[in-house]
Image (cartoon, rainbow, N blue to C red; front, side, top):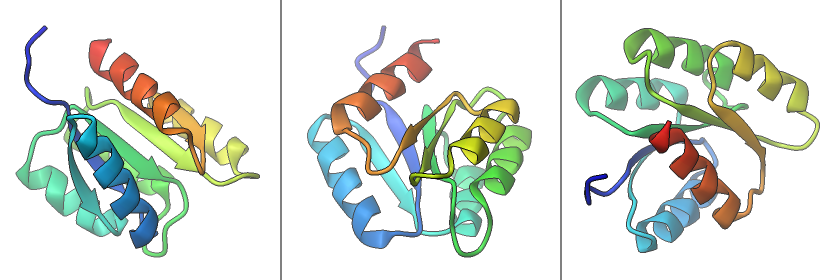
Length: 123
């Protein structure tokens, strides 16, 4: 196990939510890059390496499932954790079928999210 910080790509079009999550995870030693659309997330992933991606299921420009499928073509081994609002669990399970590591309901508990990130990075 190295002492390198975990690099997280957070893709969520709710800017306030993404900012708060980025700050809270940053205080825990994670290096978090945010993207406010699926398109931005794809462009960022082209330029940088990440240990895990956190992906909102419902975004304005593309669905989280579409972004997940593109991420999996670009970096097949990248673990992706889907975030979904209540009532979208079916879509989150669909994400699992497309290779997502796991999913959490929004708003998610930070400790639970950190645990999922650690599980994803350790696998």
